[in-house]
Image 1: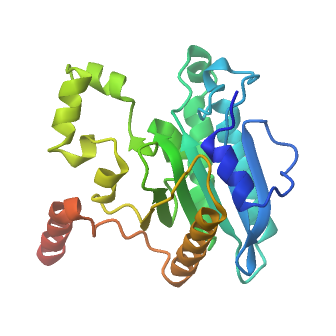
Image 2: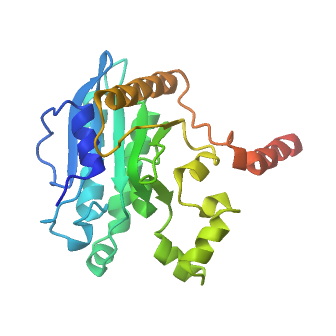
Length: 263
């Protein structure tokens, strides 16, 4: 199995630092430099020997959800008495949550909720949480790994995709062909899969133009590091998630303005 984008960029950003021990093979994490400080980098990666076959290709399943929670909680505990909490960087390349009967029976909802809760707890405890979308950010996998970030950064690349479900599934649910779904997405931004449309929803801090995400040059890596440093600095100054400034969030902003005026 080839190395995923998530695993590749985790290695590049950590300079190949030693991975944390005691984790399932599909969750990799390392403490490494980010500017003048140390950050905890985390990625979910494919594991063809995964005990749960539905999570063999980088999906977030039972083991992944609980392990993400463990890695984040350990950082929270270790930094509890520190004035400055370390940044947590979620390197995101996840095709889906793991769908399967065993996953449902053994409580995948609890495993993924544990990961969500850990990221939220870290953010509220003062850890700058940055999500770096280098590949797919799909379904419950993205909710569990990255969506709780103070800031989201993404590569401006066709291989980067954010959505609630894959195109084939969305076509079935909406009783459309994939071609018809793509046409619909041209007029309804939340239905689109490309990262450019996603940016109009006001959820991205920055969209990076990387020459070759799959075979990056040193300049690409330095650009990403600089962006991460800026995002951490921004999150320390203002932890709030500013998600109503996007081109396609004007109506949401107007509704809130009217509600504030009425109440």
